[in-house]
Length: 336
Image 1: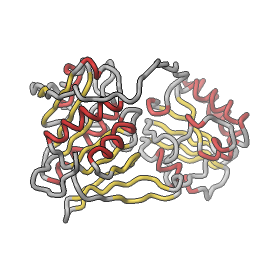
Image 2: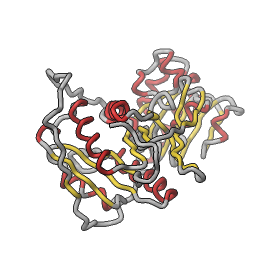
Image 3: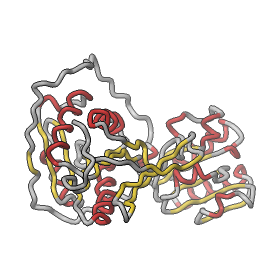
Image 4: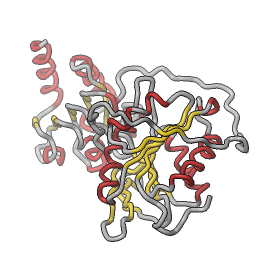
């Protein structure tokens, strides 16, 4: 499955789609929107492919979210993700469709499947990207991703096709549903008879998530170095309950052991896009702000009036959070 080096056969942007019990996964809606921008820049189309045991009905939604063509591969062996099987299946799809660009979400599946497929195709892939664009003169996919622990952003390009990337969740705005779409997905047949499963799944354990996930929250209350210690985050948790929000924090808070890694917001943590982001005692380093820049409203509380975060915050309060936060919460209680 060696990658081609010419542009004559390869066209269109192909999204590897994922589904949930409710329908299209959020990351798939993001990829359809970001992929459409790439396709428009190329003068081509945005397509999507879904693989699974019973994904046809949920895959039909892709048309309403912008996909010009939707492909479905259904087989009982695709009911649960297996790297060897999915790579063999998607490899055949790519050989048949010959996309110019192939993008995955940097999800549990995409982060594994994308690099595996890239190796089989002998093509480069950029993982965990936060933005993509087309270089006008060569129609090359330019991919931006954090490097050196989020201290810098690097721009990547490659030759050959398909040009591939995995994209971090919340890096792009999700596509809006444009109404019902009558176009039925096209079924693709693949030959899985020669697949050799090198890894056998003995058991699967689903960990119960506690509290609201950062990526799903409409309100996030985050703390940084200015909280002074783990005790400061207890106040944030109280405020989080008042606004039905999630708790987050900066890299410093994680490095100091005040909060778990799963709650870190930033390039080396989770990229978020809530309606309201409250940053308490966070200076506003670029690594952190890139992770929350897509928030609709940023409220900053910091005793340093020169803190960089005030340049990006929509509302700012200069002062000690120990004085400001209790008053803020009291007002929230009054408002019900």
